[in-house]
Length: 409
Image (cartoon, rainbow, N blue to C red; front, top):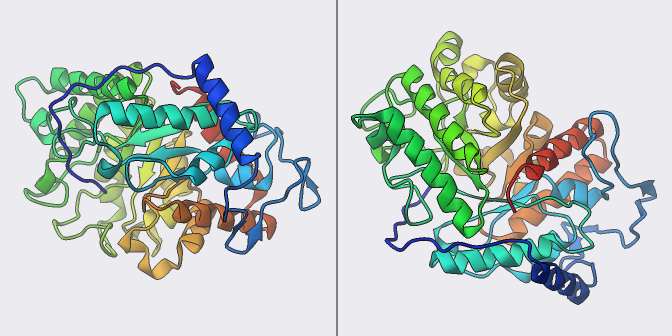
C-alpha cells in the first residue's frame, strides 16, 4: 500500500496540546453533546448505549490483571481502541472528530490526498489533537497519527528521507545513510505533528524487478543486510520519539512484480525453513532494536500451516511473530479493504477475523469513515456474543494504549 508524493518545501514546525487546544476540545464535546454525530448513533444496526456507567447492563471495562493500563471504557470505546481511521480530502469529517472526542479512535493514517502542504496537515493534526483532549474521552494519551514515510517514491511529506531504501543499501556508506534517513523521517513527521511511521520495509528482495525492487522499497537482496539496515533506521527514528513499524511480516521477499495483495490474493509457497531462516531474519533484528509495531501482510503461506492470509492467521501472529520471535509490541494489519481479502467477507467480517487472529490494530485505509465505524461495530458485536475472548481483547487494547502513552502529542 503506497503512493508517490514529493514536494520541495520545508515542513512547518508545530506545537501541540496548548491551553487553547483544550478549550477548543471542550467546544467540540459541547457541540456534539458527547454523543455520536448525526447518523452515527446506529452503526450496522447497533445502538451506542446512552448511559455512561453501564453497557447493555454490564459495568464498564476497567483495569485488571493483563490489562493494567486500561482505563474504564464502554464497549464502543474498547472496540474503538483497535481502529486506525482514514478519510478522503483535506478536511477531517466531523464524524471522525466526534468519535475521537468520545474515545472511539486509536488513531488516523494520512495519505497523499489528505495533504496539500506541511502547514495544511499540521492544522488538521491540531484539530485531531483538540478532539483527543475532549473531557469526554477516557483515554488521556496521544492518538496514533501515522503515514507511510519510507523514502524515495513512497512518502507523503516532502523532505526526508529522500533516498529510497535501495539507494541507501547501494550507497557508499549505508550505515550512515540509513541512520540519517531514520532521524530525518522522525524529525520530518514530528514537524507536522505525526508520531508514527508505517516504515521501514525490512524485507529483503530475491530478484531484480520483483514486488519490492520495482519501487526500490528494500535495502538489499541479503536478509542479514536488510535486517541490519532496517534496525538502524528503527533505532534512529525512534530516538526522535516517532514509533517505527516493521513490515510486512512474515515477508514478501518472494513476491513477483505482479503479486500485490492490495489488488488480489497472493500465495507464497516457500518452505517453512526458508521462511524462518531468511524471511523472518530481518524481523529478529527489528525486534532486537525495539521496534514498536509490526505490520502483517495479506499473503497466504501454506507451509506455515495456514490457508489464511497472514494477518488473519493465529499460526502466523501467535505462532511465528509472538511465539517464535518473541514480539511483545503492537501488531497492525495492512489495509483491511485489500483485494487479497476478497474471499473473507465484508469489512465487518474481516475486522473480527483479524482481531480473533491476534491483530491489535485494524487499519481502515479505505479513506471512508464508514469503513472504520463498520469495523468498530463488528468488534462490539463480537465482544458481546463471545466471538472475541474478552481478556485477550482487553489486553490488546492495553498494549495499544501503552504504545500511545509513549508517543509525542
